[in-house]
Length: 580
Image 1 (tube, rainbow, N blue to C red):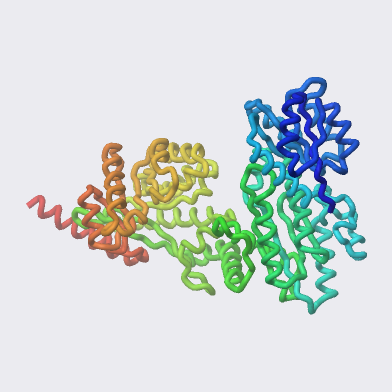
Image 2: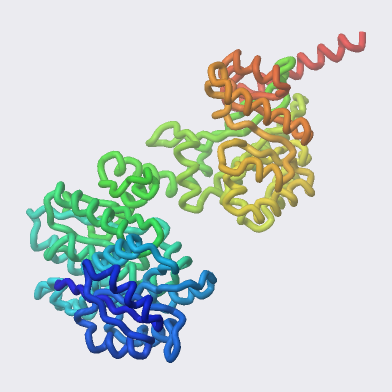
């Protein structure tokens, strides 16, 4: 691919044109135009030699905006990047220029070193990433050419159907060769469209397509499944493939947009030819999802036995939740809440476990995120609410101590119409009252959609339900949540309690939270209490209610009933003594 070295400068200010030419002359030849009309003529005449255009927006005859509009109609400008030079700091003007196809903005007055660096960076990127319309550039084999009509219109890559057919044929014809399937996806690609417009997003997808073809080689079959979802069948040495993926991700850091671009990959080693290409693609996609959940510097994840195990667990959880509810495999445990003053039971939290027939006892930390991610958490939540209301009603019939029990509400359920009505209907069904049930929501639920959560919280409270914020301090805007929402109680995240004995800062923060909540007249529950030192400190700063392993682990209902019986008897005996 030849490297062009001329830069077209379009500016009505002759002095500025000469100044720009002087700055760039050490590395580039320049062509000058005094307005957009002349610039168009020169671009058409010398387009094979022009590597980049520097364009002023304010000019007579034809200004920069008009030039960009005309350029968008001419295919030659698809391969020539444009930097807009402007002294206009109005966001609307800059955004319009980007919408019309400008690749970058350089404000006046400009810094010489910054100008050269930006020009060099953009030219280097474009000359490596230019999209060729010649199908031979994609190195199609005779077999692949049979599917040449099944190309993605934007990128020229194969579409999904063609990729599935071609890949299946290749794998069948080369059973002993080593192949990998990769899935590639941008992190936060929507930001590009939102900040720079759809045209800039399309240009990035085209550039990325070309980059994949160049780096992954002649024998790779590359496809764009949808949006920014790319798939490739690769015949390579494993170490070479790893190097290629890192090269691709690193190269994007120089792409001419003032935004951090990150792409991640999921890799599947095709060692089982009995699997369909669709299933292979799914497994690579699963590895990709784990790459997206990884650290910021995670470039790729290879599907392995550990991921295979987790995938099977996820499939078993999603497909088995309804059966588990029907068969009673979902178990409700209760963890008591205690008064830190006299150790009496003042409430409880309903917690869930899953006795899976093949996977054994599953903790909520395993199956709840899976159910949330797959949109089937409501079945579980509703079951827990129903069973908790049933248990509370039975305790009352047994004449046991009346205590409120907290149930958790998944963040997904806040998007259900009239969530509070569902809970109130269950309360009515079992013949108890709203004060028997407390609703616990996490701080992160509020952060996802503050207005929706606020509406639900208000409706719950208007209906007589008490709403508690769970895991306070686990999010990024805890104080904002307290400012915007009125809760009935606050549960301190257990992370605050870790290391209290040796961490003076943690102790100061926790004391400040307690002092603040006293002023707000907001009761506080400390959860995760594990040591006597933690309990002593909490009592010193005025915390009155706590739960944790120091007092009791979550227990089965029959064990909790025994605890309630003892507490009920103790209270009755104290009342008798008080009346003697």
